[in-house]
Image: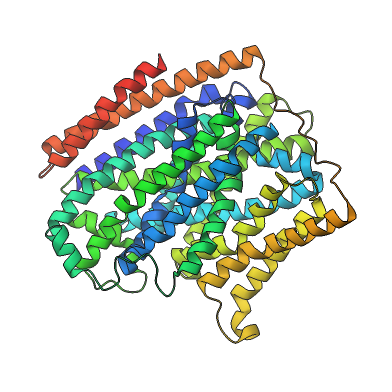
Length: 547
């Protein structure tokens, strides 16, 4: 990287920070603005936010590493998100909106009781720490590979920017910056792909020189069985993750909550086949990466094929994606702490301003802890091991039981907690001690299958028992109807929507102009110029929509 790349990165970082800070006043109006962005945000904004939160820079490091080593296997894994999103769109998203809850935590508190909420809040916060750290590490790794800055310094710089605008603007800051980050990331990848193909010598050369079985969706480690198990995990994760539940509950009605999940599904059906190409192409260019080196394959090909300025753009896109997932989780945890812990358990008489202050303070505290964990990732076997192990151990246990209660009036606090504990304890013990207990190491398929299957089996046994004993939970009908907003709240929400879309349109125009200028002056920048012009033109209908 040269000086121009650093300038480009600084400009885009300041743009994202500036956008987030613009919502400080909007987010400070009241807790509804900070926690649920007015409660009727446009569904397409929520869907893009959900998508880009899922498709982070960790994707380029984790799945990019798998794509470099195994080719289409990375696409096969990501297709589980397509089918998972489809199931959520059909059966889950509208259910969350129907509860009338602002957060998943609020639903749990009313449906299963205060103590159950405390139990899950502790576990979700621990899970959030590791998932956020697993996002901060990959982007730090990319900055480290591209710039030569130390890994810890890279993680720290990115984290400070994320924490600042997330704590300032609340959910609106997260949603709008997510959309802009989606645009930056998409533009970056669209520029890399044609230049990478040119470096390889074209599509036919790539196919001819690729390793055997490079275009198969499954291999011995990531088998079809693993695909099915991971699909079960993805379904409960997309449908039950507390951060993503916000995307279904903060729209105006059940139909729009379904649209959020359907657009997510469509985007994930298209994107992996495009965005996994660069590390696959790099396998042909340089097949000699070993150990943890494939984690940097995406950045390595960018450095090899892109001219000055465009490397900074691509890295900005990946940083943006990482920021998106991190800010979503941090924002969700801050909201849960302020809305469902601080107000309901510590300070019931807290004012609106006090709640917002508590959320902002917790955002900073939570962010600091995740930075420390992110710096420790290399000590636990690398990012691929951390991401997949966290998913298999915790995903099903934390989210499947809560989704089950959306459909069953029989499940109680006891049944849900025992299902979660059984899944967590058994999965964790087998992860750590399977060789000592069984004589062999549990593979990816069984690790994921048990992580999702055990809590579901326990819930099924409870369901049968409660059916036989004719038991119904005393709290099953606590949500009789969806909460209605007042006329003043509706008017305020519409004003927030117009302002949010206007900020998006302006930011997209700035991004498009910047990319076009880079393309006009860079060597071999024709692709960047075209991409920039397309983005600039796309800002026009967004501006009209805001008016």
